[in-house]
Length: 188
Image 1 (cartoon, rainbow, N blue to C red):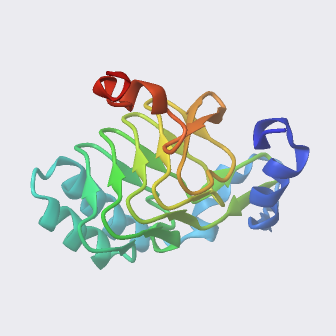
Image 2: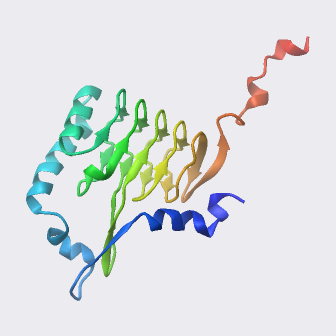
Image 3: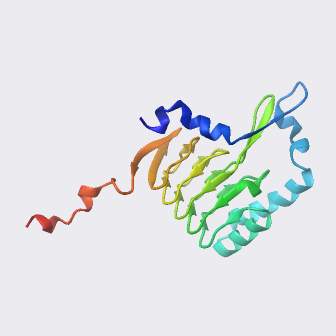
């Protein structure tokens, strides 16, 4: 059984989320100034925009560290990749990970009667493809790969490759293409 078939798989992510009730007759996004001080967003937003458009990986990492993102050594952020603007301090990207072009790491969900926050952790040498969205509370293991345009709503175990909406396992690096990688001269 894969995590995609496991009702407990999504529960693990949800167990790591912090729930915040919001008062009033309107949806929780209407209460965002109570959730995060507007001045904090006034700082985070231009820093994230500058990081999204900078071609310099060193500058991107430096800027994102200034607003609280835990960025390891050798991390590469593709152009227009976007960390959470409300809670960037809940993101950890470990050494040599790659966040692809226009990928988004979210640490919050605004719902009707509550908003939720959760840490996002991207392991060492993990790769997140272009346009992928990672939801709050998700952990992407070391050497894991997330395909382009995937929606990651569950943890991705180390070394596995996930793809789709929602993302599901499609293989592991050790198993993928073993026969294709075999030396054809070995049969001679």
